[in-house]
Length: 344
Image 1 (tube, rainbow, N blue to C red):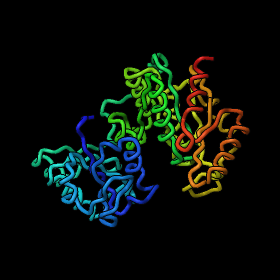
Image 2: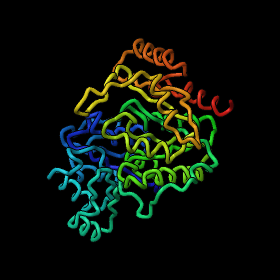
Image 3: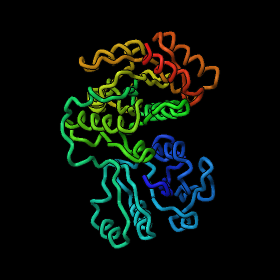
């Protein structure tokens, strides 16, 4: 990723939405220095995490953006009419555009023609490499320790946990690498494959390629987890990622207070006890690479400090594993558990 990239994050109508603004929030947290403005006409003149919010692409130009990043999820993954106008304005003003939605901007003939005339790039972060294939077994010979974050549900912080552990490991001088498997992680790290856009037969092959590339970058790989193994909709991507990345270790992620998988019909879909999730993930690992859960990352968002510490203590007592909230209380204890597992 170019060192001089300066982001205008497109978040029209969604810059204050913690769920649909996930990409924006991730980039603001982990690439804050590269962001010059957030575009949201409903909040123009305000700030988001210290970054000015502007009302139009033209208003951002004085801040010197080079790249516009689609920072939100839209309904059905498609762009409403007002967004088409925003995207055209970005291209007309000479900004490259990065897009993490399932709809590829590079396949929009009108936008593609305009981008060609203006000499800018349309980068679809979810577009998988064209030459992917099935896994070969190279994942089992990677000269690195592979740690995969897995979860009790989707959208509970697996990427964030991976990033926090990577930051803490690098602070300690370890050759640590965050391995991105989704569009937000790719926007943050500048490389990776969005595995949920890969043909099912090639998903494990994509995960294998990621850990092979990660091992060329460092010795301790934090693979960003996707989905949840018991999620009725997204379990397929989770299992493919487990078998393709072939981790030695897992970090189990859970949101405190969550008792049922959210956002799916035909339920109920209860979340089993954490101790059962530990056993389940260990049992579905590759027989050629048995993996174990070494700690539990607890998302305590929305809880006061006392209740949050109680939730962490409860997870630790139930599983017998070290637990903590790496965002709220720091990633030190969880990293200690991983390093300790490597040394044992």
